[in-house]
Image (cartoon, rainbow, N blue to C red; front, side, top):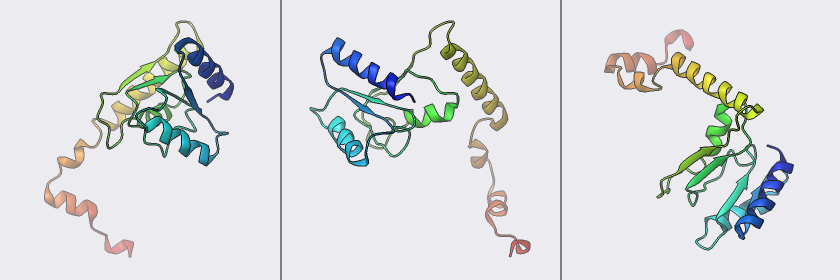
Length: 152
């Protein structure tokens, strides 16, 4: 989320790994964004692409990625999940591993605990997702989809 942290991370990775590192954030123009994605997706493109959660959370297909690192945690687990999904796209041929940096005793640890609590609560409320839909018989499914006369 924070551009300054992204720039620090980009510089550190460039220096330590001696490789080019792309960085996409909210101030990146649409043209720059498209160019960076195309470069990263190419066979000889840079192996590391740093993205802010908001800028990289939608509209990207990053099937060249096989590792996703969440460095700066966010309060809403759906925001992180959406960013992770950029690597899990149609055309992905690699196993994708997701890593989350959490340092004990820090705000990130508290955020991580809150995220896990939210996810457990959502699972308890929603249950097993959309499986209920496959358990409907034909009549129940028809009743669900039919437009009622009182709605006209």
